[in-house]
Image (cartoon, rainbow, N blue to C red; front, side, top):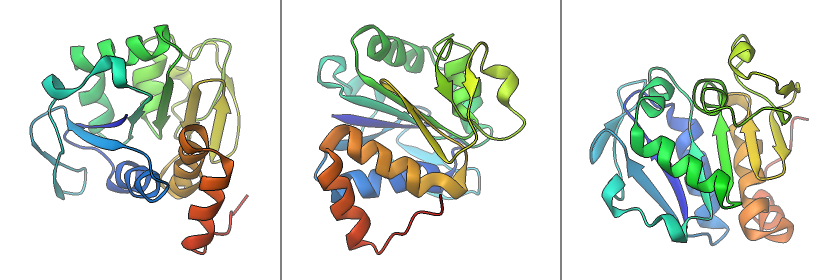
Length: 183
């Protein structure tokens, strides 16, 4: 199961593009409302989450996805549940994906990017202590997948598809939506 964590103030495209593309690829995906069943994005778009934190089965987790946005990333980082699930993934060799502010604000604060290649929203690199910052839309380093920002959400989502469903499934999704990489 892929869990996409939504907290008030999340960036819509960074959250819903992975949900859309992963589902097109055939992955089991659930959105989790960290701040309630209806979560309001950074641009005041209400989204009804599939489930709440108490419905998450840690053992079934294949990947956790942390969208960026402000104050969404801060709200994610302030959640004890988010820290427990992310730490579970780190300790059990599961994928952890974060985009925009989330790599710096959440993963950086949890010291999960040390000695990893990673990317985040430009200007927030200081939060990624001891990470090797790369300059591309998406970066995969082992089980850590990071994305730069909304502009790279498609590359980020396709990298998640590759990780969970394989390269052929990701290419099929990319072809079906007529996607051509900017990189």
